[in-house]
Length: 146
Image (cartoon, rainbow, N blue to C red; front, side, top):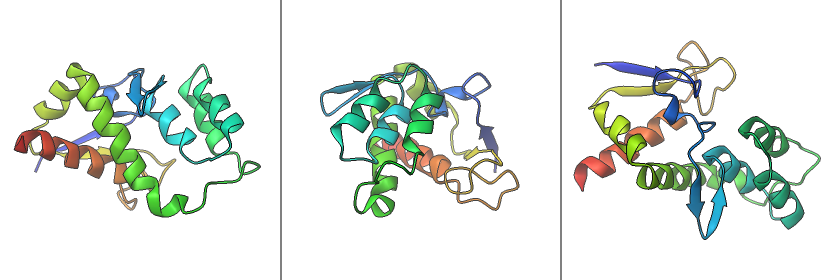
């Protein structure tokens, strides 16, 4: 089985990164990247959400979203995978080039390859959950079935 690794938005398959500059409109709001959307969904406080949405770069949105001085919304851990799925579906639906690249991967296993993340990525050594890769494969399967 073919395995495709991705991580940096500037490398091969970089459009799969949440930092890739593919704006998405979700629930009537435009987000610069899926990272902006994902991080904003962690909170209920409108001031924090606005600050994240207004971040000029995805790394800034990520840092704000990881700031534990801000109270996370109740139940975040149980909803974060669905939030990411919604973001990826929007990105693929709204950007034909991302959809084409995703579908071109066939039945390859998609892996976010990074030591920085054991949940969304593979932990750098395959021990991580690779949830982002699995969500991308789920969205790919949905498009192939339609």
